[in-house]
Length: 125
Image 1 (cartoon, helix red, strand yellow):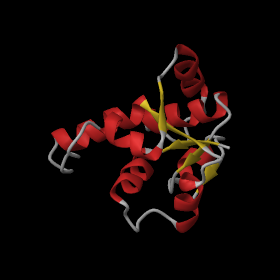
Image 2: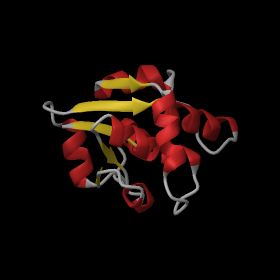
Image 3: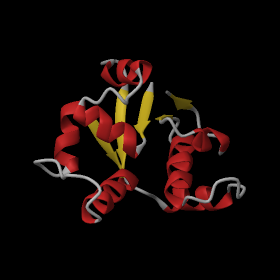
Image 4: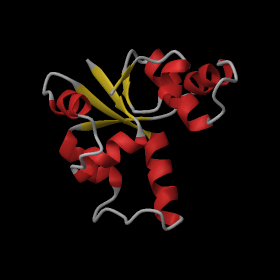
């Protein structure tokens, strides 16, 4: 299975937080699964640090995520076009891109956000 971590899931997994559900943690730690981090999460994490809402990790999040075995997923024009085509049931552009990436790349999003599933992306929580 290919898992795309939503930003909160990525951060909680890196922190070892109990806010991550037991099933999400089990899926992320399963060595049979591919774990992916979107460029979306790098942006969202960086923005939270810049706004003072988060303390930065000791190393860049792209380096920290290597401990989870994360692979990096760039945003392509196809992802952007798919995200733009979704109905306006959820307007957050970053969630729309994550949903598009999951659909187009055959991934499940690890997220507690039901709006991503409402856009048609498979989710795990």
